[in-house]
Length: 499
Image (cartoon, rainbow, N blue to C red):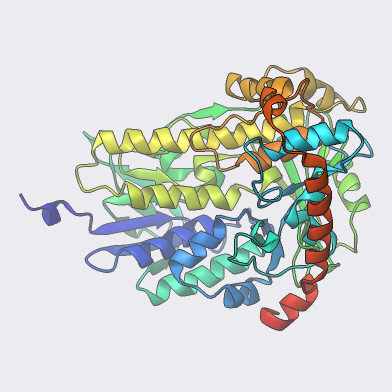
């Protein structure tokens, strides 16, 4: 039997928004012939997107599509992002920066944090972030693309974007439809399954139309119409580790275009600030066990940098993931596969990761269980590593001003995370993990930022003759000078991608 006789010829995507249209665009780019791609969405159903901050891999997704960065940013009112500033997370009055890129360049067999810790103990070093190009540029409100020469400190940072998620979905819709994706306006009200296999065969719309396919992508958001509503795949609740279960989102007037996201902790949660070209995205993520919606709105509106442009919009959620992300002939992409609060800007990345795995493990009509198991294993590992990284921010705190912080400091965390915490606490070492999107720089920034100070030096330091303190001081001066040589973030946008 030839391989082509088992090929999938009909794909239906249920739901639009960023998840649906990112999926449609990627599939349209990948599948050039012999397969129809249909997306069903209803304009009556809102999307969660409130203005998105992203992490650097989003650039790979846009590059895969072949879209112009300047055009994409113009169309989505986008700005650049060099990292995240955290305020009041470890304790009140304290702040730190999670940068994209690295701390300097490799200069010794012993990692830079060990030289920094020794220099700091001797009073010969500043804050950790001062040795990172991303923070030097972010602090100076500067931006340009990294250079290719690895000898130049301007090669040591990465970047991501802030943009309007609804405009991004519209941009990708045009891209996908131009490449043959068919959009159907309608609301799915019923799902028909094969009586023996349980595979989804058709979805029925409110007006009676039926749409059939061999492969379905569930991009229906938290409703999870197919993966849960039809297939009852189950849900793993992580509320005991991540107690925040609500968010209020509100846009405010345009403010300074800082090239970074800001996250400020409050008594029962935290507030985001995402600067776009036309407005600023804001939200307050909080635990309803310890704060009412009215109190949360008062905190949010009382901490805006500019006047609000709408009433706050309430989003309820349960942190966790589906027990399986791919069940029979349905793959959940985006919020239908689970929810993690946007603390580290991973929502769009998880959509992108789901799409990448779909392309890597693309099925035929056999839907081999071996392929489905591997997809689910990798998808679960990836979201669990992100979960652990988010828990790290909450667990490592010494705040005493609210029950949320006391609960998080005292709670038992996943064993996979506890091992990382203990290794860093004892020797300042970063443990790698499979499918961890956050690398050593990210873990180092949060360990130190959340005051997880190593108890002793790396033993290898005793065998090294390299003196780290003079190098670190030279690095700090070099980074500051390099940052001031870049254009301002506002000027770069005005020249290249102003909406």
